[in-house]
Length: 81
Ligand code: FES
Image (cartoon, rainbow, N blue to C red; front, side):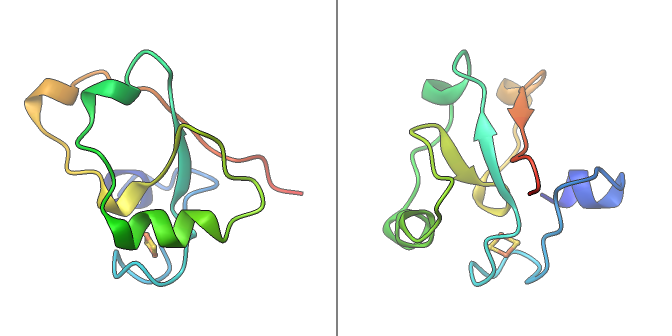
């Protein structure tokens, strides 16, 4: 989330600054990468469950800790209505 916001990536707002209270960092992890991420914690899953456009590969960008292992990670953003 921070990387996207710093680079002004459209579609990733991160309004709460990573406090797990807004959901504006919702994104879809590319299928090739989903199993390489640390699984979401209960708080993240609870937030995701409230989203209409949730998919099996949905995550909150602010909860993904970027490490060297994730170099090249492909993330898709929801299309705004
Ligand atoms: S930035 Fe608000 S929940 Fe992720």
